[in-house]
Image (cartoon, rainbow, N blue to C red):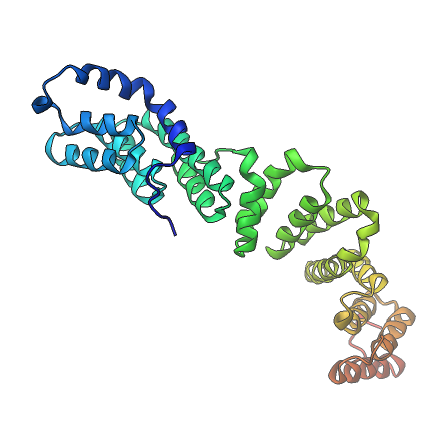
Length: 316
């Protein structure tokens, strides 16, 4: 959860530099004025300049209620909310400012990206992700390459693999030689069902870290089995057999080996290769531990159909 943090030296210095050109001249102008004539906005600028963001925010909000400071008032209040780490409140005010003048979108993006970096440095991946999401709201497609990997890992850990996958692709620009990043990219693609891309990255991982090949055997088998089913549905039988052969060669996932033999036999029967189909059907029962009883029974029925010529026309 986001919390107000009061005076935060690191982020405050960033915010102070970003607003110095606007705030400091106003503070200087107010220094010699009658205190009774000071506005809430000027008091807010002074508080912000000395790093008292909560007081600054209170004055800016008062200014919005009483002084009608215009778009700049929304920007100042939003800026103070960001300094306090409050993304939702800042985003709402920046939305109002941008609706009146789109030029303020750049300030919003700058603020939220700076906050995201600070949250990342503080180990708050949720806060960093929230800030980047706000930045993307104002500039869709914005790339923050130094945060791509930690954000990808954040979304992957949260089970949001679609978001994670896109960020991993950004992260690869900096981490193409890192086997762990390649593996995580492959896993994210596998989780969203894009096994074709996943296999490509798993193979790349194997090339970068050949001694760690055992780590991906199950993933390779799972994706190959899934792709075999897709190709079979599409009528690409030869390609389906290639994927099934990969599953059988890997012997992973072991629970699916009997099904892989059966599916291969079914395709071979459709293609009219009866001897190979019989061999594959017989392998169902002998694949490692005995296959599921129902599947073994179906395989034996198919064997009898082929041997006694009771298969459907066009098959073995």
